[in-house]
Image (cartoon, rainbow, N blue to C red):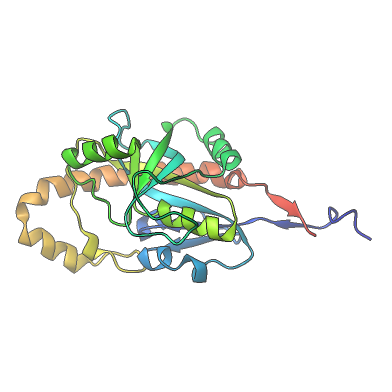
Length: 250
C-alpha cells in the first residue's frame, strides 16, 4: 500500500539544448540529463525530447548587448524577447514585441546556486535563429529595439517547445563576445549536430583574411565563456540543476 503516491518517487529528467559540441562538452554526464546539440536538434525538439522529460534548459554562449556585461559573465534569462522565423506556439509569431517568461521558481534557484568565482547577471535575452549582433552598431539596434541585455540563437526554440509541452523552461548563457566586439559570422560551418566544419571555416577565413584579428579575439573570448559554462554546470549539477531531485509518482 502506498501513502498517496509518496512512498515511491521518481527522478525528474531534464533536457538541455546546446548549439555547439563545445557547449555540450561543458555538461557533466548524468543518466537523468539528456543533452541535445546543434541546429538539427533545435529545430526538431518535439521528436528529440522523450515524453518522460519534465523540464528543458537552453545552455550555451551568448552575446552581450548591455555594455555592463563582461566576457565570461553568466547570464540567466529572466525574460525572453523573440524574433526571427515564426514560432508555432500559441500566438507567438516572432517580433520585438513578443516575450515569453521562463519558470520563475526554477530561474530563481539557478541564480541562487550560481556564485563566485562566476559573475552572474539575471537579464532579459533576445533570441533569434540567426544571430545578427555581429557589430557594435547592430548590437546597439538590438538593445534599443528589444531592451534585452544578451542575445542567443536557441532559447526561442526551447521556450516555444516548453509551451507546447506545458513544462518548465529556463535559459543560461555565458558571454562570448562583448557589446563593442566585431565577431565572425560562420553560420555555414556548423554541422547540423553542432560540430564544426573545419575546412569550411578555414576556407571562409582565407577568402576574407582581413577578419583574422577578429577571429583570433573571438576564439579567445569564446574559450573564456566556455570555461565559465563548465564551472556553472558543475555548480548546478551538484544541486540537481535547480530542479526538485525527485517527485511523487501518481
